[in-house]
Image (cartoon, rainbow, N blue to C red; front, side, top):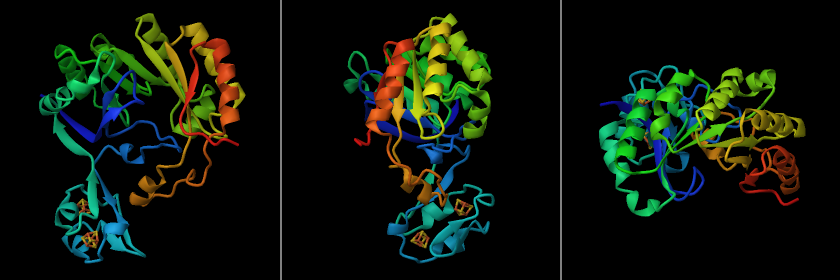
Length: 304
Ligand code: SF4
Ligand code: SF4
């Protein structure tokens, strides 16, 4: 039996694979994309979130934290490097203004919970394991997809693919569809914007296609990072040569997650960035379609 560090479980999702799905967000990521929409998923340990609107200023959290992890400076601030993720501040806060993001789940119990959602999955839906990076917790991920398959539940894994292919290979027989991120084709730019090189990511895509895996590719469209015509063209050329995905989705940017950065007390360089313009993503999708006819775009757009 494995333990998994889980950030969240979202039901009735329509954005994480085919049909209606339950999405399980694993905590911990080996990339560090500046535009990340789930910043609380990056750290590999449970993290304190502070909801300023609920805080009544009683200072109880400061007194229960024996680590000096919390201090006041125009509201609460956290010294996260000192935090042991003990959860005392969450437990003692009288107004639920503190929440620990990231809870440990026994995979057998989690499996039982997920199977209960079967009623709304229908023919195409199922469970998607997402993140963070699911495959940073490979044993837990494998146990979940095996268990779900044994129960006849559809499975999808959403991954950035930056690890040894053996880890992915292990789950392939139990995974109906891989949602695979290819963000930037140029290796130097990939490293600049995500913190890692993309050689393994591209190699692992080729291996997935050699194994005849069912794959949807996703590319976030981020201004001045991934949204150049050349980037889309290069990714398109790569996909055409390596083997077409069933679908290639260009995902528009929005900054609706900026509150998440505030709750983590983190500055976000994209907090005032605008939504992707409709005409721009349409033009990029036309380029993508030259290589992958099934290319589409998704997300909330700026009309003009
Ligand atoms: S989780 Fe524990 S160590 Fe971290 S800030 Fe709260 S009380 Fe302090
Ligand atoms: S214990 Fe809760 S309500 Fe009191 S100061 Fe801390 S966060 Fe605010």
